[in-house]
Image (tube, rainbow, N blue to C red):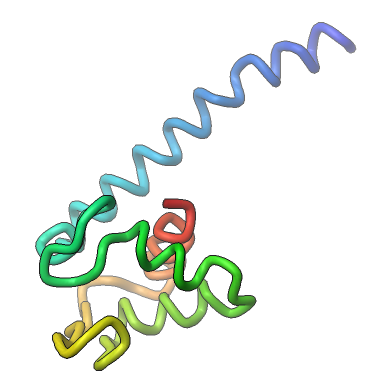
Length: 102
C-alpha cells in the first residue's frame, strides 16, 4: 500500500503538467493570446494581473467565464473585451480556472 501511494505521488506532477499543457493549448486555440499574455499587458491585461485581481473572489470562475464568452467593457480600462463565440461554457470555465492559477 505504501509503495502504491509513493508511486501515485511520484507521477502526480506528470498529470498536472499535462493538464497545464492542455490549458495552454486551449488558450492558444481560442486566440486568447492575440490580446493577452501571462506576464504583460498586450491589448488586454496580463493573465497574472487578472488572477491577482480576481483570485480571492468566490465567484471569480463564473465571472471570468462570462467575460470570456460574452465580453466585457470598462473592467480593465477603456478597451472592451469582445465576446469569444468560439468558446463554449465548459471551455470558458476551464480557461477561467487556468487564468486564476497564474
